[in-house]
Length: 162
Image (cartoon, rainbow, N blue to C red; front, side, top):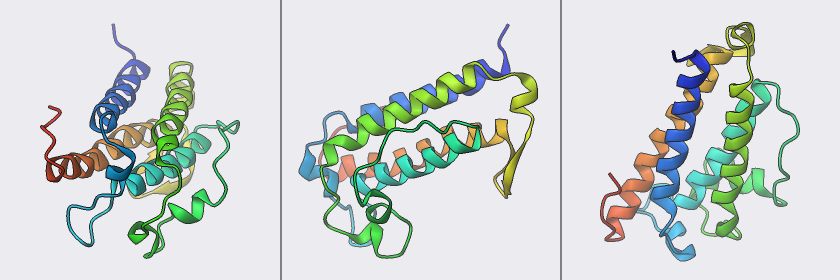
């Protein structure tokens, strides 16, 4: 019988797998491609996912996080100019960093009790108020931005992943 942990881990690992498939054949210069002038590039999307994943990890009590390259939070922040930047540093570090963090989240969720999963989060948000809903949103959030990377791939002439 499936546990709530199993369902959450499936969402987290499934969205991670799709993100990896979407990015595995992109060349470093292609991480900067924008399908239109105001669209996010894959580099910024991945940096944004890394930063939000860190917040999610903290929200479930994980504090031993991989170090970020210097200036990372500013480069990939949400201020209006960050997504429009043309320089995001070494983009080849982005997917491995996301994957390290996602594995930390998966391992944490695997070991959480029902009481831990149903605990209210410290700072409720309109999209989540309990640990389980925060974790679920982490999987959904990656899928949302995976759609952006899918569009980027198509404008680069790549075939669909799914």
